[in-house]
Image (tube, rainbow, N blue to C red; front, side, top):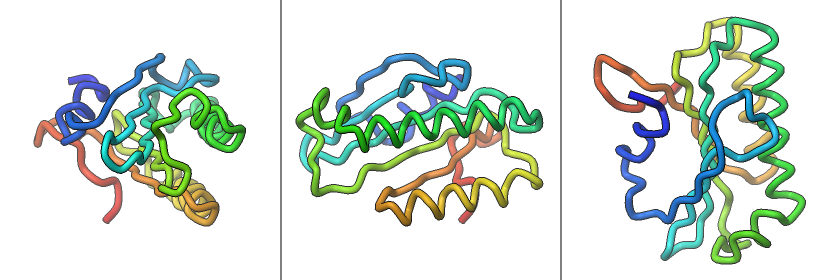
Length: 139
């Protein structure tokens, strides 16, 4: 099952979805945007479709995170999606097709801390094939 399909299966069906592209190779776009019709909360989903066991893929991931932050902080999110409310925290959801290797986890934790320090909510999930669902990367 593709990660984008799994995201739709995981309770986002009541959200309004906007899809651009998908994956780390499309580093300058936001993969998927959901805006909750009642709360106005924006959820920006990134499909981490390449293994972070390769340093080049870690760089692509970092670049794409910067794209997401830039999209919000430049005002593009609110310009393109005025229904996304400014007083509600934006959620970044990073969905990994493979569980990241242990040596990458400290970098992911540090990135999450930086983003939450800026007022974002951050989710990190991976697709667990044996359960056929997304699970939290860390509790």
